[in-house]
Image (cartoon, rainbow, N blue to C red; front, side, top):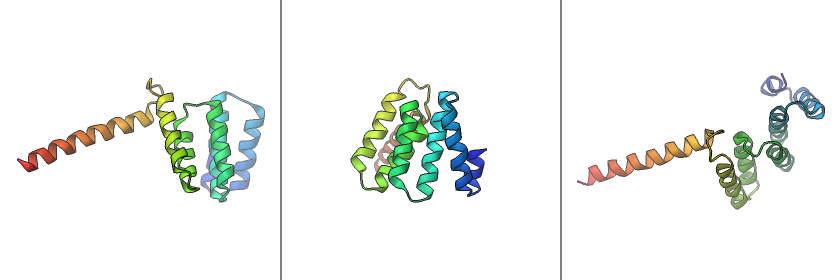
Length: 127
């Protein structure tokens, strides 16, 4: 429900619901997602450093939570910490290399296939 409130633009209601969820300490996955969405609330309020802190908290709970890895990387980039942002993505790929949370791996595999296809296309064009 908190996510719905956030999408509707009701940030205060979303924040209260997400903070209450974190406080009750349900299943760790729920806590990680609550932290991720709290980061989104902070980002929507232009509190980038607070968003970064929430994304890091999400990753403490579940280091393999790829949406938090990507959100953290974007937030770090936004404040000019590009090298740190790249490191977050690399750490995220390492944390999920077994494919259990293979979302980011799915994209990198697709990019690799795209590169191979483009290389082949360029080779054919040059012939």
